Image (tube, rainbow, N blue to C red; front, side, top):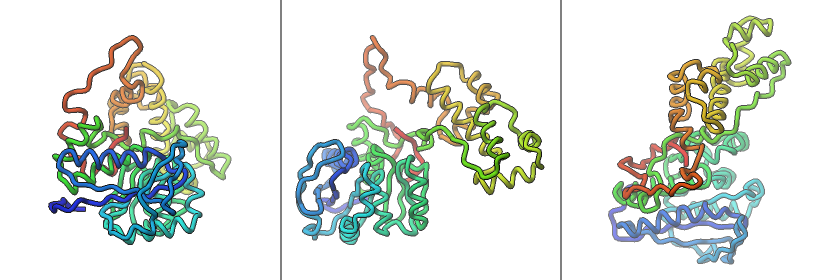
Length: 356
């Protein structure tokens, strides 16, 4: 995992299977092969269960180099991609045995997107911190309680195991590996060449769905949650919610902790934050209006909430999600000669760094 100073090429082995997601494979491949153009030395091989070509989730067919059982050489990096059929794959005992066998012959094992479920089902994430696509972080935590899931991380390194978030996050993880093994200069050149961020701003939270009022057993609490979701800008102080429910503030706090899993203030802020996200994504109202309508009151309060929770400002969030940057009838903006990589190092600290 440390900087590779030797002359031996680093072997990257990628397991593929029917229904694998294409970008989970090609993203890392592009990073490592691009690194070879800037001083890195990587050798890539694709393996399948039987050595035969596989059909991806997109319907394309992939040729492979060998069967997994014939891959006797120890790899420096083992990549386990994901696919939309992950819930079926984790029940495939033969595939899980292959994953365990390849891991035993690898110095570093990484997963992309829902590939984390394969690692978890194989027992390789027990006692480790990990992440996966934001849509599936709760499912990963629920199915595999021995795994410490970090839902907002773009990628997580825990010892010699690394896991990444959805799809394109495999590029972020691969860039971090290149930086660790070949140095920041090589990783920076790869990022510039691929026109991607070397370290993204923000976390997976900015891609989450709108908050839905959690199911609560108490009808009275459900009404309180519904009222907050229906009118995020309303008066939702602890005392106000307790008064409307006809209970004490202490009892209201206890109900939130027991049935919602958070504090009243935190729940209200989350609903307001997601209401503000929706307004910024779909409209052009001034930030001050968004702050007032969503219940934050002032632009500064809104900005602090965005930076604290999403690691981006409201204005940056709007720019990132309203458009790709190309408007009808306008010329496509040219990328800077240096690309978006800039001077920021990738680093394993990107656990919790932003999203493309």
